[in-house]
Image (cartoon, rainbow, N blue to C red; front, side):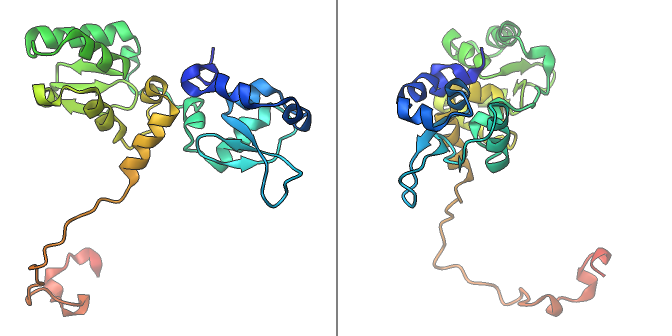
Length: 230
């Protein structure tokens, strides 16, 4: 069964929100495929007598396609970063040797036994489920799917929280299907949005630009530039 048909992805809640009238209006596609694609019916304010499809997660909207096969394709064209699309994408794990939950857990148990006795089994199991394994060669824990790496030295008692490592994992620039399929699309989007939010840097009111800093590029002597600029 696809992840798109699970409670974690809200499949059954979406299924229940479709009325008989909605299904009669969308007669070219099946209810199951619409729900798998994260779609719910929406009535546009400008055309209250009509319905269109809307993604519950990325809020992409579009008219009903002619066939079921076109639903995800159109959805992907409009919003390629939607968690529904990421989950069904052709992305493959970077390190296939550690696709197995058991192998990842075994490697982390080795880390616990040899270096980090303060790690409890529940925490290790959580790391393994999110895709992490212990790479003894480089002394890192690493996600087999997106290769997000965390130094073993980060595994201190103060950092041992599910939130800390899930947020660290989400900072990877790669869309990690493993993390998405563990925490679900809503949490995945929350983490991604918080990662993309512009950082606020405090401004020192006493800071002044030094006079020696040139105001224009033309004020800089040529020998201070790399030859590549000429």
